[in-house]
Image (cartoon, rainbow, N blue to C red; front, side, top):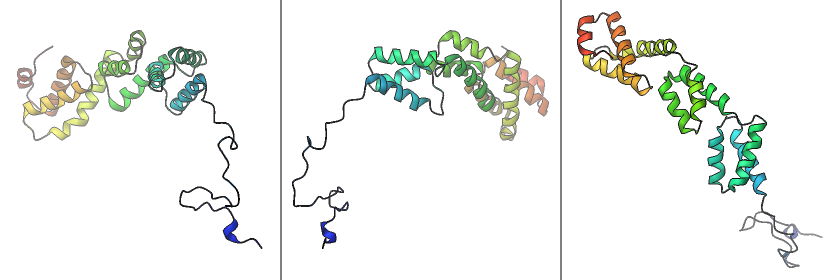
Length: 205
């Protein structure tokens, strides 16, 4: 009759199965040959596909990731070129979508959007075309909407502090100083501030 203690037990001290003590443990050779290293091109494709899952990436972002994982440069270039050929990498589409999304969700101006795209390795000509989607009037409208939302939180502060806070908010989002000051001046005047005093406190472009 076989006793329970004779069965392999996965709960041993090492967390591995124990074998019947009646025979020697299998050697490494008997367990099969060691796994061969993965082909660099296969590794590169796997890395790129994993990074692209659910999140678009620029070619430079993927190139940086492959470099960090020590994929040979020639292999990385070949894989990236293939991904670009089949449309899995498209910096033009990436930049256009980035500008559309970040302008509407965060209110970022062209200057801030261009800076973000540069950090992602997008080529200057592609950046110029992407931010060119936004014209001056659209940018000004967004700036006005941002100030209107922020205006209420500055009530109770003195005029100079309100000006600095509102204009500073626009500056951090990439708006030029001249545009920021014009928008703030208009918003405060519509709220009832004396336009002449605002002209005095806010310099022209």
